[in-house]
Length: 201
Image (cartoon, rainbow, N blue to C red; front, side, top):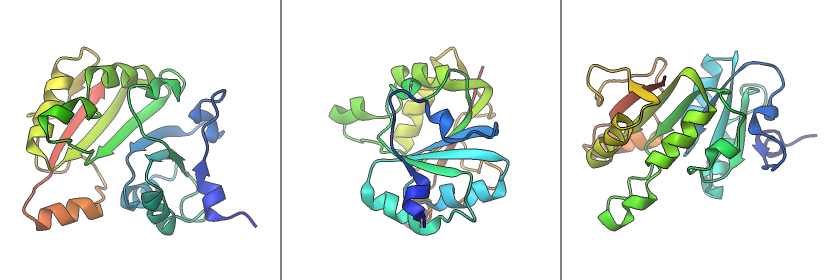
């Protein structure tokens, strides 16, 4: 009998784009940093006609995700153990991803660590290559400085445009929003999330 781990966890194959994890022709969405698994387990159930790939590096967090997933409830979900950076374009076919969800990425708050932040021009260059036209990038962070950093990176990139009246909003920009454990905990501590929504031109 196949285990949940064998069903959901997929190793990287250098010769195979991750699009091939599904062969049913459905739209493909990715979550970068699946955390404790609230989003990757709940949101795909609301959208059974879409496929989802969640990326997470921490083994502990992968285990937490697996506790919330089941092949019966989440047949359209796969997990890949990997840290994502500006080489993401090497993992997917060009213009093949319908949307990206990135919730509470590490803000690396110290100035000397800013180069480690996920959102850099090179990352957006790479992301633009794998996204279909009109694909959306939905982002949440409770770190105001990082939110401003993200907006600056996007505003100077010709392949993306903000879909919000103001680039940073405190209201959900996502239909069927899933409140993650981290968002709930940070709200309890008085840190409100900042939501950003961009579209691939």
